[in-house]
Amino acid sequence: MRYLCIMIGGFLGPFAGQSLSVVLPEFAADFGISLRLASLTMTAYMLPFAFMMLVSTYLVRTLSPTRVVRVAYATIACASVVLVLSPVWWAFVAAYIVAGIANAFTAPLLQLILRHITAPGELGKAMGTYAAMQAFGLFSAPLFAGAAVTVASWRWMYVALFAFAVFIVCVGLPAVPPSGAVSEAVRLPPGRVLRAVYTLLAIGAGVVGMGFLISLHVEALFDAPPLTRGLIVMAGGLTAFLFARPVGGLADTRGPRPLIVGSLLVGACAMVGVGVAPSMVAITLLWGVAVLAAQGVQVGVNMLILASPRGAQILSTIQAFRFFGNALTPILILPLYGVAPLLGFGAAVAFLLVAVVLNAEALRK
Image 1: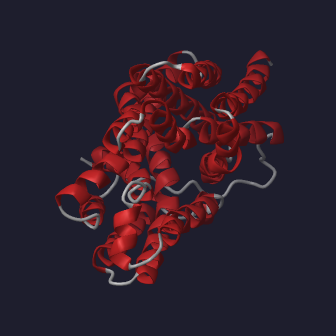
Image 2: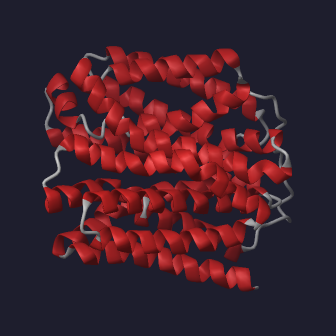
């Protein structure tokens, strides 16, 4: 049951972060604000989350990860009550920021707990399962949000968030020791850190952050309605949910670095295919492959960092760059897509190919 709580936690963070992505018009109407102001609500969640991720595991290195995560979910449960009942936008935003900061502690610490309770030969599969739950939360949230609005109100999303957070607090998590302070003399090679940072930045910008652009692409090409677009984007999360565990198992049998290089190559090829695919079915299948490949990359990077002497302390710092990569997609890739769709997809592929070169060089050494 406590293992289940870890997996639910993997689902909840991305689910909370993407919960408003397809219901912004209804959200804006409820609070009487502009659509632009409503869209800033998601930024208000993501920026504090990403910046806190830079330091979260280091800040709590001498504390019990289990206790920190339970406190974080208790905080999220309290914030969820405000999200459900808030009569004004600013109160909702304040609670949403609190939830984002709390999730910056849950995401990396749940993986530290998972590492402690998993046999070394099974860690890749376990990390793959956790990555699958993250992907499912990320890409299913828009569909669940749309369903909630259709049936009742977008606020029911946060009733679900409250219920899951309370469940984790009540059931608890496996007890593991703090990562502890490591001598400052023990340092990761700068090249390894920079390689990991860029690799996660690349999959954030070149794959994970492309979900909204995939939606725009199928609308422009096929005049796809909102539900169809949501299902296509969700296919990425569903594919990762179904297959990320066996892909993660390749890190156990073949090693993390070969998994990273292979996944980056597959992801780059899949994104090329998405850019030239002639049908929605082909785009859906290729998008699923790309997201699955991105999860393979993340599993490999996480395992390499966790195996390092100070890895537990800097895990969240490195993972934060995937979210900064997400933020780069609308800034760098969307304008290029506006000039020519192939230019936008080409930029995404370029991010991935640079990561291939960096990791292939490390593999050769």
